[in-house]
Amino acid sequence: MEVDEFKDNPFTVVIDQDDHIHVVRATQSYDLSHHAHAFLRSADILPNIIEAEEYDKKSEYLFPMLFCYRHSCELILKELLFYTERAIDESKIASDQKFGLEKMMDFIFARSGHRIGALLDKLLERSTFLGLDPIPQEVIYAVKRLGDEDPNGEVFRYPFSRQVELHYENAMMFDVRNIKNVLGHRLHWLLEARLQQIKNLR
Image (cartoon, rainbow, N blue to C red; front, side):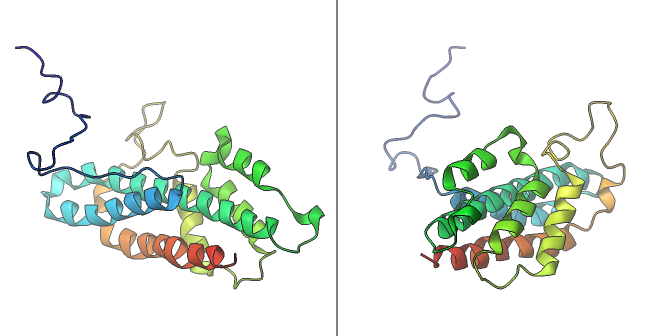
């Protein structure tokens, strides 16, 4: 059977919306918060799917959910770092306290920039110059726990390590609602409340 380059291509760009009702009008943006929100909402939706599944299949959806939460967290921290440094750069803070936007971009997109712990530590350090209320301890703790579970973004990508050892032998025992209610809510606060605070400093 011949391949139809339009119908068989999963990445076909649809022009005529009248003929194709499942069109998603995606807008690319340099604002990472849009992408962070998309991953965060995807993770929020997955518990409904998990709970609807048969018991022995629930664990199959745990890793996609955790991956989405982790990736959204990484994007949120990077976005917060960018806007925090921009606010510092535009402030009257002494120049020797300024890290600089260019250096911050290098830090954010460095090979080591996938480490949630390092991103969080840098954010907490730079945030002290803005005079905002401290990030709540429960938010910091949730982000640190996520970073502890998957420091480099490798654990939730695969069910096992390079040594072929399962990351979680008791994956079915996780309370996915608790993950959403605790981790999801903390990440929403960072994305929707804290980021808006920093953006409003301009």
